[in-house]
Length: 340
Image (cartoon, rainbow, N blue to C red):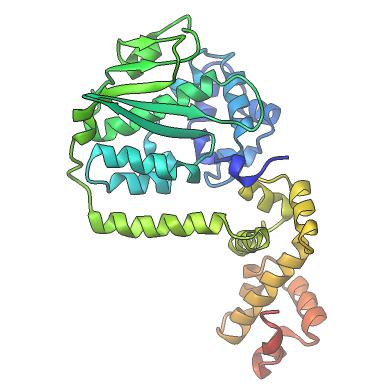
């Protein structure tokens, strides 16, 4: 069993399939073995367990020892979604790193950052946490590489840290590590982290927009609040977003939320409800809006409510409201039931 806090956005897999093939791996087989839905390759907002992401990287290292670092080095910080947006509008590089450290949980709970300053030297500690034990070399190197990618966005493509420190041992080949981290790399150390200068962090971000930063901060706070909402409310919101796609099933909702469908069903049952109950709640509320407050054709309403055919919608509506959808639209019958 895992909880939503132990998940990562599928944007983490950006570029994975191409890199896997380039080192002789079958990306779909690798995902299957790690227990990651194949849809994660095309839906960046789908969530899956952080342990599965870690295990996928470690297994992929059979194709290339530096796989995790290569994966990060070929893409931009935009994979962090809203975290990248708030970072982009900070007044200086210190603010960028602070924003990433404060909000990185929106992307993944597996990695956290901590900044330590001593005189002119700054250490950005990169810490990984997983709910189950297992090797973390690839995850650590991915996290470290991501920090460097973020810093280069504001310090220039040629910037390299003063040094990089790893708890694990050295790889057989250092080529990718030197390209990413520069010449000063130490292994078998006491911490995982990037060493830079105070001057680096004080560098102004000339493209920052303070007002945009405030607006994005409010947006991110809303995302965080939504993530902390009661489980039934989060399920309803996910269903509401998926209904028009025709994919509002417990399997797809579970994938979006990073929860196994059976686990989700048990958690809802413990709260005295079920997925079907919540699906009906959303459909009833949405049907009232579409039928009584708009002139949408019934076939379009059927699609928006996730029904496979107009006839299925018609049967559902008559079973729940005792009348046809067209009669309800004409008479306003069922207004009192629409939000039940």
